[in-house]
Length: 150
Image 1 (cartoon, rainbow, N blue to C red):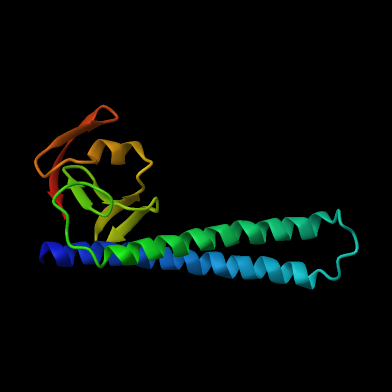
Image 2 (cartoon, helix red, strand yellow; image 1 turned 60 degrees about the vertical axis):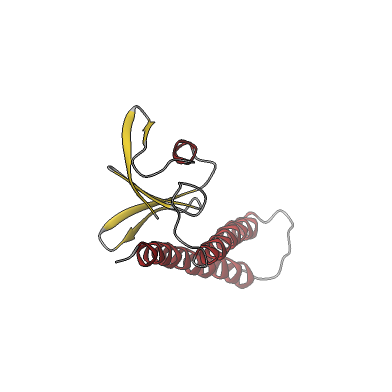
């Protein structure tokens, strides 16, 4: 598998995870709205049940919006070529972990490999930024050697 194909596979797996998260958030958002509607007419502005349902709907709406923004960012990466340096959009494989440096989406699977999608605000991103294959970083007291960047 070429570097480009491997990179595409990693990004597509992360997109699939984000689409799943978006789907669940949308279902929950719609469910909370429906429960609020089914509860009946708004007779009391201090109605705690309706307030709870609307807050729940808003929380899921934010999750849905964040997942869609993540999907858009990931799809933009599909248009870019592989990287030689660890920077925003690169896939970095160390001797102990694998990272996609783009959005804070957490752990996802690519085949049987575990990857972590991390954002630029994380300390590990700062440690990796600007490094090349063969360089080493120290994070949380552990040394990691960068084996591959694509």
